[in-house]
Amino acid sequence: MLAAVEAVCVFTVGAAKAGFLLGGMAAFAAGWSKYLHRDLIRIPVLLTAIAGAGLNLYVLWRRQRLRNAPAAAWRKKALTKREQLRIVLVLSLAILTLAFVISEIYLHRLVHNTII
Image (cartoon, rainbow, N blue to C red):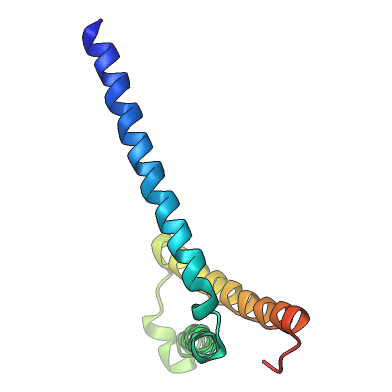
């Protein structure tokens, strides 16, 4: 019985410390958000996200185009489930990234009335 009470005590103290750490990190992040939200940081991050998503979409398109080329017909094999899953994952993440960038640009213009 004493061990059960002690385990609850250890869990409570650990959870309180984790909550304190999480709260401190959230306060720190909230304090830095006004600096991280500046155009000097925000625009390069958006451009990097657009470039990365565009590169992923180009690589997927090029892969499919090369795979369906007549010269590759003799060595063409069916895609494994893992390859299909990887393609769907990369495609959906690239589209989701572009959707997030578009929504961020739209909402930022809506809230702050800036150009980008």
